[in-house]
Image (cartoon, rainbow, N blue to C red; front, top):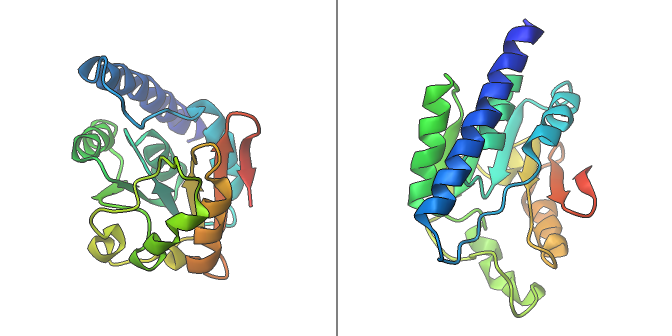
Length: 185
């Protein structure tokens, strides 16, 4: 079974790269807030966490690659993304590889945390407004065992505090940074 899973994971990585290139071509010359993490490295981290975690939430899921990888590895996986076109891309990716990953459009910042932008640097990048994705989902951060995000530089502490406040006793945070790679907090 592992060989079949590995082939599916490789297909997700391949299709995800294509989706990223398509997104960049569509946005040529336009500023956007999408920078993919090292998706291949995410696979090992997700596999390591699967024995202790069943539910997975990606904050800012973009093209959906890591959420779909989590689903294939065995998580009940959900991604939240504020940009409608990226939700469509992520849903198309999930459908193409036979993934049950779900995607919800809206802000991953809980409404009760949106006033905490003061904790961010003045030039923060994370959109803190938008539709309440948790209301749409019918779940909260506390309902997830593993929450994943790739925060903008300087926004790590704000994000960690958000998950600490709204996560449950079994919620762990996995973050990716260019400097440190993947970390479990």
